[in-house]
Length: 62
Image 1: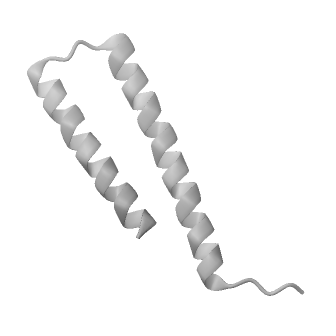
Image 2: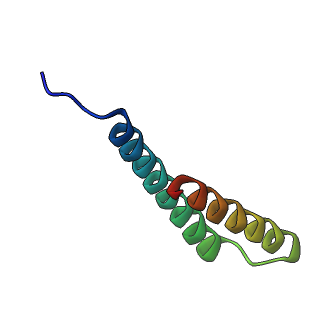
């Protein structure tokens, strides 16, 4: 049997989670640009989502 370091497993899982979040986020951006106009409340939600995603990305990378 091949031994695997728990740390490397956790790191690869983090990478997969980050990739799936970024993929989902890009779909959200495309949907916004294609189907919505940027009304003020919608733009505020979009900004908050951007802040949350960037914060999450920093947490996953640390």
